[in-house]
Length: 215
Image 1 (cartoon, rainbow, N blue to C red):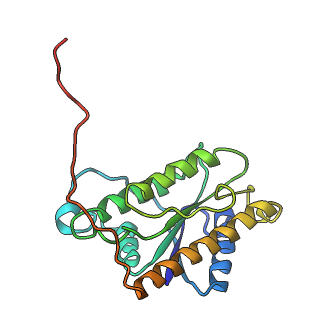
Image 2: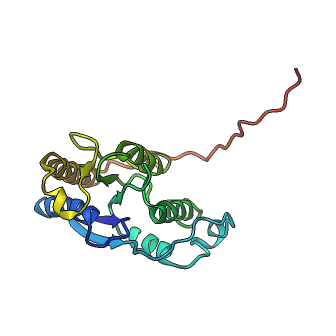
């Protein structure tokens, strides 16, 4: 069982990395393999709405997004970490996740994330954490991914990695999050061994909220 830890901060070894490190150490104690994936600090384009991924199975902008989607095919769970920029996740991570999840919901990749547990880790000096927590979780909710929680919202406070050491409750929240993720993955594995199948799918129904009417 493997969990990919995504660092969405422009700082490879900053506060977000420290929070994810706490998660990683606890997952290792639970026997869960991990892989770190830093999105880097170079510009990442947003989705251009070309719909090419619906036919060729990957984003037409061939960059780190496609690299991650390939790695995601072998993962059993995901944790996306971000620092807070203006009460939201970083702009680069927003572009990254928009394209990752849109291309992964295309015909060729539809099962990459479906039914795989996911979680978010939010790091901020002070505020904007809950808004960012809600923002990231929406990606999981629309892709039928179980959302793993902790004893508190998944956040740690501090300007830098050293500051995070002072937030003992935040680091504890990370450890509990990791144990909950490990527990859920083990439950899935046990279910497979007992022959429990994934939920039956249905053909997608799309409706439009816009209706013409006469007063």
